[in-house]
Length: 114
Image 1 (spheres, helix red, strand yellow):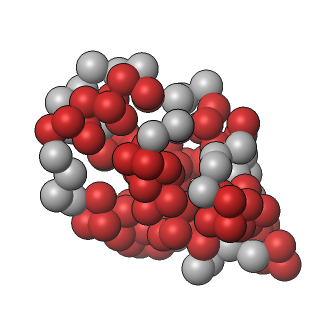
Image 2: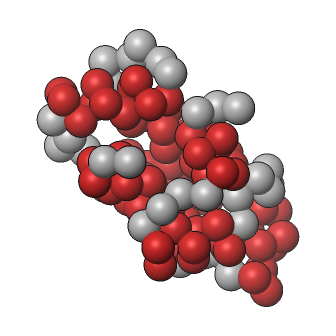
Image 3: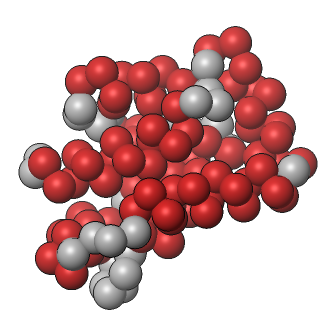
């Protein structure tokens, strides 16, 4: 997997890393579900950290995500945050990705919208 792809994974999951720990995964999911401001702030944080990508990086991410969007970043961020919101991604997924740089099968499935 290319460094650019890993950067996209790490970027958005770093956004989620600060608020997801084993002890409070369920609490964070509840915040996402009940507090639209929390959801919006995390989405905006991901979008702002993902700004400035080159057209080539966007094409590569769109191809990986199996979408034809010129700017796949909003969909990418939405999928990651929704994955944390609905419990498909846990703090362990985030921690593993950040420590190894390699997304696990659950992260890959969430990014691809499966």
